[in-house]
Image 1 (cartoon, one colour):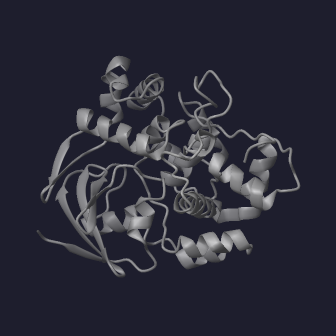
Image 2 (cartoon, one colour):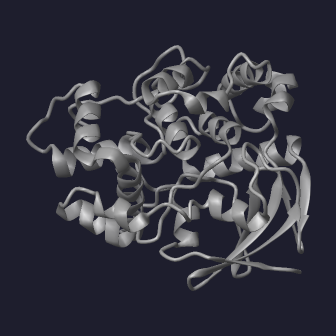
Image 3 (cartoon, helix red, strand yellow):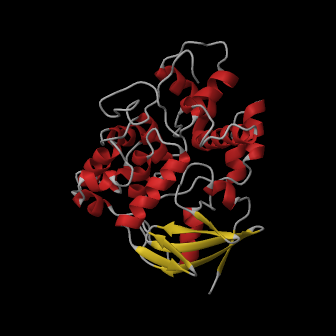
Amino acid sequence: MKFHEIPAPAFDLAMTLDSGQVFHWEKAGTGFVGTIGDCAAYVEQCGSVLKTHTSGGKLDGFKPSSFSKTVAHYFALDHPLADICGSFPDDALMNAARDFCRGLRIIRQPKWECLATFICSSMKQVAHIRQISAALRIRFGERREIGNHVVYTFPPAQRIARLSETKLRECKLGYRAKNLRATAQRVSSRESELEEWSKLPDDELRNNLCELPGVGAKIANCVMLFAYERLRAFPIDVWIERVLRQHYLQRRRRMTTQQLIEFSESYFGEHGGYAQQYLFHHARTALRKSGLSRDSSTPKTFGARNDKRGRSDKDPGGTAAGAQVVSASSVG
């Protein structure tokens, strides 16, 4: 097996893959196996170097000249992490989160894969999101072998669009099946041009995403951050809302959703998406270490990546596909 070696200073592979932004990578020996677009990949970290191997395949949405460049691009090894972290607000919690998450980077995910995965994530805990992602890949993706491991690509929008809602529900999607299928049909028919949307300003991009079935403000901001590299996008779920209320807004019990968004955009600034991810990973990991498992014993109100409160037409079980909701009694 031929390995490529990639310089990766200021990077923590394991933490990045475990930080709730991507859900299909699996531990394999001393490294991880997964896919980058259509490519199967093995990635292992040895100090400040990544050792990688691929079985080949097409790339979704970008065409770097070599696999090494593909991996470096995917893991955003070019992001000036020291400058980004240096731009964070200077407060005790943010400093603790920055130190705890040292080396965590925002992955550049393929747009359709990221959008579809977060539509499936609505009101689901991380373990469940991983199960749904695996089921979709195994049933409808393409098989790839990498060393002694088998991985599956994420099914393209065209494939999902042709499936029945019943078939999708067999992947434990529930009501999300209808939303995923409808969005896939818009993407596959080119009614929604995900790649072309890269040219849009933030507000217009967010509005376009929120018009898709199953997408509310929370999921739109996740897709903007993880697929469109809009590093100012600040997704607010129950974890982040709790962090904001308990540590930044203790004296302001009643705030509208818009006021909370405006505070976050103003206080955390141009790299607010990175700040959000650091606060999110620090908060949920600290709770996990204290005995409150995010995937089991954590109360349901705070157990998922998306908000579970309220109901709407877009999201029969809660908010509009994870849209941001602020209440006086809740919080990230």
